[in-house]
Length: 274
Image 1 (tube, rainbow, N blue to C red):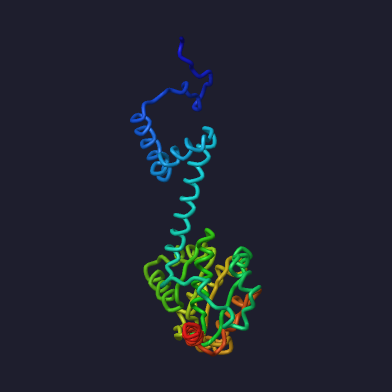
Image 2 (image 1 turned 90 degrees about the horizontal axis):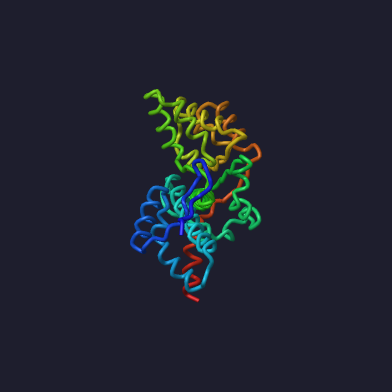
Protein backbone atom coordinates (compact mmCIF):
# COMPACT_ATOMS: atom_id res chain seq x y z
CA UNK A 1 0.00 0.00 0.00
CA UNK A 2 1.32 3.42 -0.94
CA UNK A 3 1.88 5.62 2.15
CA UNK A 4 -0.49 8.56 2.51
CA UNK A 5 0.98 11.97 1.85
CA UNK A 6 -0.36 15.43 2.44
CA UNK A 7 -1.79 17.31 -0.54
CA UNK A 8 -1.34 20.64 1.26
CA UNK A 9 1.33 23.12 0.25
CA UNK A 10 3.08 25.91 2.10
CA UNK A 11 4.43 26.17 5.68
CA UNK A 12 1.43 24.34 7.19
CA UNK A 13 1.84 21.26 5.01
CA UNK A 14 2.23 18.07 7.06
CA UNK A 15 3.01 14.49 6.25
CA UNK A 16 0.55 11.74 7.12
CA UNK A 17 0.36 10.70 10.77
CA UNK A 18 3.13 8.26 11.60
CA UNK A 19 2.79 5.59 14.27
CA UNK A 20 5.48 6.02 16.94
CA UNK A 21 6.67 3.65 19.59
CA UNK A 22 6.07 4.71 23.20
CA UNK A 23 9.73 5.73 23.77
CA UNK A 24 9.77 7.67 20.48
CA UNK A 25 6.47 9.38 21.35
CA UNK A 26 7.81 10.38 24.78
CA UNK A 27 10.99 11.78 23.21
CA UNK A 28 8.96 13.72 20.64
CA UNK A 29 6.65 15.17 23.32
CA UNK A 30 9.60 16.21 25.48
CA UNK A 31 11.36 17.89 22.56
CA UNK A 32 8.22 19.63 21.27
CA UNK A 33 7.04 20.93 24.65
CA UNK A 34 10.53 22.28 25.33
CA UNK A 35 10.61 24.11 22.00
CA UNK A 36 7.07 25.46 22.43
CA UNK A 37 7.45 26.31 26.11
CA UNK A 38 4.72 24.00 27.42
CA UNK A 39 6.04 22.67 30.75
CA UNK A 40 2.66 21.52 32.09
CA UNK A 41 1.95 19.36 29.05
CA UNK A 42 5.47 17.95 29.34
CA UNK A 43 4.94 17.03 33.00
CA UNK A 44 1.26 16.05 32.95
CA UNK A 45 0.59 14.48 29.55
CA UNK A 46 1.17 10.89 30.73
CA UNK A 47 -1.21 11.25 33.67
CA UNK A 48 -3.86 12.94 31.56
CA UNK A 49 -3.45 10.34 28.80
CA UNK A 50 -4.00 7.53 31.29
CA UNK A 51 -7.10 9.23 32.69
CA UNK A 52 -8.37 9.92 29.18
CA UNK A 53 -7.97 6.26 28.24
CA UNK A 54 -9.96 5.19 31.29
CA UNK A 55 -12.71 7.67 30.45
CA UNK A 56 -12.54 6.70 26.75
CA UNK A 57 -12.15 10.28 25.66
CA UNK A 58 -11.80 11.15 21.98
CA UNK A 59 -8.51 12.46 20.67
CA UNK A 60 -9.98 15.96 20.53
CA UNK A 61 -11.19 15.70 24.12
CA UNK A 62 -7.72 14.56 25.25
CA UNK A 63 -6.13 17.44 23.36
CA UNK A 64 -8.57 19.84 25.03
CA UNK A 65 -7.63 18.44 28.45
CA UNK A 66 -3.88 18.89 28.03
CA UNK A 67 -4.25 22.36 26.53
CA UNK A 68 -6.61 23.45 29.31
CA UNK A 69 -4.15 22.16 31.92
CA UNK A 70 -1.38 24.20 30.31
CA UNK A 71 -3.55 27.33 30.20
CA UNK A 72 -4.64 26.94 33.83
CA UNK A 73 -1.09 26.43 35.04
CA UNK A 74 0.18 29.32 32.96
CA UNK A 75 -2.52 31.55 34.47
CA UNK A 76 -1.52 30.45 37.98
CA UNK A 77 2.14 31.20 37.27
CA UNK A 78 1.21 34.59 35.87
CA UNK A 79 -0.79 35.46 38.99
CA UNK A 80 2.11 34.48 41.24
CA UNK A 81 4.50 36.50 39.09
CA UNK A 82 2.28 39.59 39.21
CA UNK A 83 2.06 39.39 43.01
CA UNK A 84 5.85 39.01 43.30
CA UNK A 85 6.43 41.92 40.94
CA UNK A 86 4.24 44.13 43.15
CA UNK A 87 6.86 43.93 45.93
CA UNK A 88 4.41 43.84 48.82
CA UNK A 89 6.31 43.92 52.13
CA UNK A 90 4.22 41.04 53.53
CA UNK A 91 1.23 38.93 52.66
CA UNK A 92 -2.22 40.27 53.55
CA UNK A 93 -5.47 38.75 52.34
CA UNK A 94 -8.89 40.34 52.21
CA UNK A 95 -10.49 37.28 53.78
CA UNK A 96 -8.39 37.95 56.89
CA UNK A 97 -9.77 41.48 57.16
CA UNK A 98 -12.84 42.16 59.30
CA UNK A 99 -14.77 44.97 57.58
CA UNK A 100 -17.14 45.19 60.54
CA UNK A 101 -14.31 46.97 62.34
CA UNK A 102 -14.61 49.89 59.89
CA UNK A 103 -18.11 51.45 59.82
CA UNK A 104 -17.04 53.71 56.94
CA UNK A 105 -16.45 50.67 54.72
CA UNK A 106 -19.81 49.04 53.90
CA UNK A 107 -19.80 45.55 52.31
CA UNK A 108 -20.93 46.93 48.94
CA UNK A 109 -18.00 49.33 48.78
CA UNK A 110 -15.54 46.63 49.75
CA UNK A 111 -16.95 44.28 47.10
CA UNK A 112 -16.63 47.03 44.49
CA UNK A 113 -13.01 47.66 45.46
CA UNK A 114 -12.25 43.94 45.32
CA UNK A 115 -13.69 43.75 41.80
CA UNK A 116 -11.01 46.09 40.49
CA UNK A 117 -13.50 48.08 38.40
CA UNK A 118 -12.21 51.32 39.95
CA UNK A 119 -8.72 50.47 38.68
CA UNK A 120 -10.00 49.96 35.15
CA UNK A 121 -11.72 53.35 35.44
CA UNK A 122 -8.51 55.04 36.65
CA UNK A 123 -10.09 56.15 39.93
CA UNK A 124 -7.95 56.87 43.03
CA UNK A 125 -8.41 55.25 46.43
CA UNK A 126 -7.49 57.17 49.58
CA UNK A 127 -7.47 55.63 53.06
CA UNK A 128 -7.27 58.10 55.94
CA UNK A 129 -6.89 57.17 59.58
CA UNK A 130 -4.57 56.76 62.52
CA UNK A 131 -1.81 54.16 62.67
CA UNK A 132 -3.05 50.63 63.29
CA UNK A 133 -6.49 51.19 61.78
CA UNK A 134 -6.09 48.71 58.92
CA UNK A 135 -4.93 50.96 56.09
CA UNK A 136 -1.87 48.97 55.03
CA UNK A 137 -3.75 45.68 55.38
CA UNK A 138 -6.40 46.97 52.99
CA UNK A 139 -3.86 48.39 50.54
CA UNK A 140 -1.91 45.13 50.34
CA UNK A 141 -5.00 42.92 50.24
CA UNK A 142 -6.69 44.93 47.47
CA UNK A 143 -3.40 45.21 45.60
CA UNK A 144 -2.89 41.45 45.84
CA UNK A 145 -6.36 40.79 44.41
CA UNK A 146 -5.68 43.21 41.57
CA UNK A 147 -2.34 41.52 40.82
CA UNK A 148 -3.96 38.09 40.82
CA UNK A 149 -6.51 39.44 38.34
CA UNK A 150 -3.58 40.07 36.00
CA UNK A 151 -2.93 43.75 36.58
CA UNK A 152 0.51 45.33 36.92
CA UNK A 153 0.86 46.58 40.50
CA UNK A 154 3.65 48.16 42.51
CA UNK A 155 3.65 48.80 46.24
CA UNK A 156 5.98 51.38 47.76
CA UNK A 157 6.10 53.90 50.56
CA UNK A 158 6.23 57.63 49.94
CA UNK A 159 9.75 57.89 51.39
CA UNK A 160 11.05 54.94 49.35
CA UNK A 161 9.54 56.27 46.12
CA UNK A 162 10.95 59.77 46.54
CA UNK A 163 14.40 58.32 47.29
CA UNK A 164 14.17 56.12 44.18
CA UNK A 165 13.14 59.11 42.07
CA UNK A 166 15.95 61.27 43.43
CA UNK A 167 18.54 58.59 42.66
CA UNK A 168 17.13 58.19 39.16
CA UNK A 169 17.29 61.96 38.61
CA UNK A 170 20.94 62.00 39.72
CA UNK A 171 21.71 59.15 37.31
CA UNK A 172 19.74 60.78 34.47
CA UNK A 173 17.22 57.91 34.50
CA UNK A 174 14.24 59.92 35.75
CA UNK A 175 12.26 60.00 32.49
CA UNK A 176 12.51 56.25 32.12
CA UNK A 177 11.52 55.63 35.74
CA UNK A 178 8.54 57.99 35.59
CA UNK A 179 7.38 56.22 32.42
CA UNK A 180 7.65 52.84 34.15
CA UNK A 181 5.52 54.01 37.08
CA UNK A 182 3.06 55.66 34.70
CA UNK A 183 2.55 52.33 32.89
CA UNK A 184 1.39 50.48 36.01
CA UNK A 185 -2.27 49.58 36.32
CA UNK A 186 -2.17 50.48 40.01
CA UNK A 187 0.39 52.29 42.15
CA UNK A 188 -0.02 51.47 45.84
CA UNK A 189 1.51 54.36 47.78
CA UNK A 190 1.66 53.82 51.51
CA UNK A 191 2.63 56.13 54.39
CA UNK A 192 1.76 59.45 52.78
CA UNK A 193 2.33 62.10 55.44
CA UNK A 194 4.53 59.99 57.71
CA UNK A 195 7.64 61.98 56.83
CA UNK A 196 8.14 65.51 55.51
CA UNK A 197 9.55 65.72 52.00
CA UNK A 198 12.09 68.28 50.89
CA UNK A 199 11.01 70.48 47.98
CA UNK A 200 12.87 68.36 45.44
CA UNK A 201 11.37 65.11 46.70
CA UNK A 202 7.88 66.61 46.74
CA UNK A 203 8.22 67.83 43.16
CA UNK A 204 9.51 64.44 41.98
CA UNK A 205 6.59 62.67 43.63
CA UNK A 206 4.22 65.15 42.02
CA UNK A 207 5.56 64.09 38.62
CA UNK A 208 4.44 60.51 39.27
CA UNK A 209 1.00 61.62 40.46
CA UNK A 210 0.58 63.91 37.44
CA UNK A 211 1.69 61.18 35.03
CA UNK A 212 -1.13 58.97 36.30
CA UNK A 213 -3.82 61.66 36.69
CA UNK A 214 -7.29 60.57 35.47
CA UNK A 215 -5.69 57.71 33.55
CA UNK A 216 -4.31 55.17 35.98
CA UNK A 217 -5.19 54.53 39.61
CA UNK A 218 -3.25 55.35 42.75
CA UNK A 219 -4.23 53.78 46.05
CA UNK A 220 -2.68 55.64 48.97
CA UNK A 221 -2.90 55.67 52.74
CA UNK A 222 -2.19 58.51 55.15
CA UNK A 223 -2.41 59.02 58.90
CA UNK A 224 -2.95 62.75 58.35
CA UNK A 225 -6.08 64.56 57.14
CA UNK A 226 -5.83 66.46 53.87
CA UNK A 227 -5.58 69.73 55.79
CA UNK A 228 -2.22 68.61 57.20
CA UNK A 229 -0.62 67.46 53.96
CA UNK A 230 1.03 70.85 53.65
CA UNK A 231 3.53 69.77 56.28
CA UNK A 232 4.50 66.81 54.10
CA UNK A 233 4.79 68.63 50.78
CA UNK A 234 6.11 71.89 52.34
CA UNK A 235 4.70 74.06 49.53
CA UNK A 236 0.99 74.72 50.23
CA UNK A 237 0.23 75.09 46.51
CA UNK A 238 1.90 71.78 45.71
CA UNK A 239 0.05 70.11 48.58
CA UNK A 240 -3.25 71.47 47.26
CA UNK A 241 -2.44 70.21 43.77
CA UNK A 242 -1.62 66.73 45.11
CA UNK A 243 -4.84 66.58 47.12
CA UNK A 244 -6.82 67.76 44.10
CA UNK A 245 -5.42 65.01 41.88
CA UNK A 246 -5.77 62.24 44.45
CA UNK A 247 -9.35 63.10 45.39
CA UNK A 248 -10.92 63.71 41.99
CA UNK A 249 -13.42 60.86 41.41
CA UNK A 250 -11.75 59.10 44.33
CA UNK A 251 -12.96 56.50 46.79
CA UNK A 252 -12.14 58.08 50.16
CA UNK A 253 -12.43 55.85 53.22
CA UNK A 254 -11.93 56.95 56.79
CA UNK A 255 -10.48 54.12 58.87
CA UNK A 256 -10.90 56.09 62.10
CA UNK A 257 -8.76 56.49 65.18
CA UNK A 258 -9.33 53.23 67.04
CA UNK A 259 -6.65 50.61 66.40
CA UNK A 260 -7.92 47.89 64.10
CA UNK A 261 -5.13 45.58 65.23
CA UNK A 262 -6.04 46.00 68.89
CA UNK A 263 -9.74 45.43 68.27
CA UNK A 264 -9.02 42.39 66.11
CA UNK A 265 -6.80 40.91 68.82
CA UNK A 266 -9.44 41.48 71.48
CA UNK A 267 -12.14 39.99 69.27
CA UNK A 268 -10.02 36.91 68.59
CA UNK A 269 -9.29 36.41 72.28
CA UNK A 270 -12.96 36.83 73.14
CA UNK A 271 -13.93 34.29 70.47
CA UNK A 272 -11.38 31.81 71.78
CA UNK A 273 -12.68 32.16 75.33
CA UNK A 274 -16.34 31.44 74.45
